[in-house]
Image 1 (cartoon, rainbow, N blue to C red):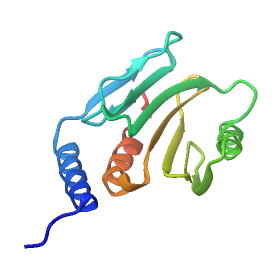
Image 2 (cartoon, rainbow, N blue to C red):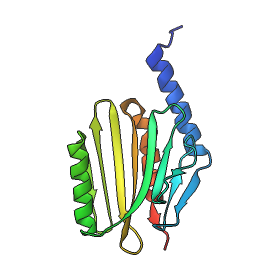
Image 3 (tube, rainbow, N blue to C red):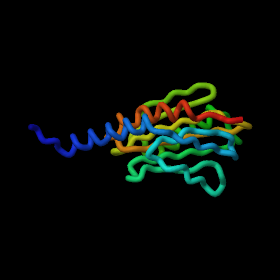
Image 4 (cartoon, one colour):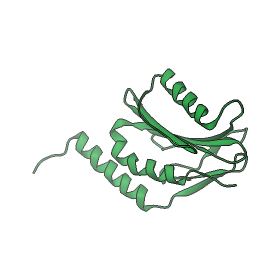
Length: 160
């Protein structure tokens, strides 16, 4: 009988968590100030909303994955210009942007920095605002988070 090493045990644990995450109940976070909503995956506690009410943060209990959601008004630029600015900010912070896609009402990008992956999506929301989510996690969790990113992306929408 072959013994499983640490990486084998970790792979089994991640697959089990992925199955649980996809089968379990997701919750919904709704933001009154910017009128957007997003589904929150199992394993993430409810979003701890910021004092200014623009969104908040949730993280897995082990701290290896962090989900941020927020809204902002598009005051000085168009939605497309805002998205380009945010991608530029990510690059300036050291993220190697490996994917980006833009449409008239949404944009998404992802990148890597060291052992971390980031995926961020923005949508044109209500009353001249935009809504975003950003998910950061370790590279070795990519297979677990691919379906979670897909669900988050579909669920982020304006609620006006």
